[in-house]
Length: 315
Image 1 (cartoon, rainbow, N blue to C red):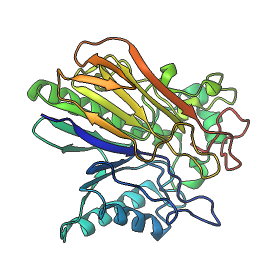
Image 2: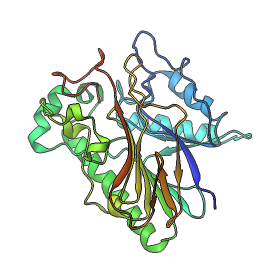
Image 3: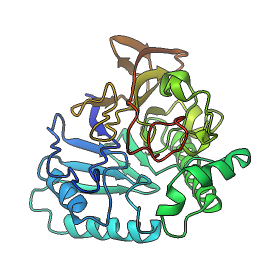
Image 4: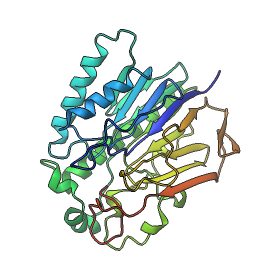
């Protein structure tokens, strides 16, 4: 069986700049039938976001969307989800040989008899030691209605519990399935997945970007073959213990992330197949270690939302 392909992009930030959004300027060239947009694509208050998503349905057979943290700016998460779900129902009703839109909000989608996508935002867990600095320096809490650290952490717990439960269920009842996990927030502190400039975390906001889930079922399961994420504006592509870990993040218009590729494809292999990345092949199940690393970060942006220079963008 041939592997299933996904064209994966995130953090397009087409809502920027505020005076000249770039929805009409950014075009995605299809390289496979399936597109995965992993959050921070634009802002729901601008109807051009839904127009942009609608255009992709003329290009792709499937368009997946994971909600980021910038889509709800000026609104609330509840209202944003309601709007996206309404769009999903509307565009999927007539079909007329157009693509299908799939909102990944604690959503399972079976691409085939052997490949499943599990998608959710997977909000980070903000540590108690950083809660004050995150609330002060990260603009989500002043730009999203009804959002605070407690709500953020509760959303993290809900997403993580759902993801663990789904992975465990598939692993037990359908061990032949390969799983691709798609999230917005980063699930790993591995060096290959993180901008080395941010390791020091002088401002104390790292837990707003990244949460280490290495001890969780969703990360340890050998059924999980791919994990795609965004949010950090750092591109990477490597294999960890038989799982391909990928971020293909554009970033802001004037500070595009190094390594971003608008035509980037990932392949979801069936369990037992070989994982291949950057010229390195590794046996899928039971493979240990990392290799084939590609990485790149964005340049400091004048649109940064975190004070102090420890992080180069508004997460």
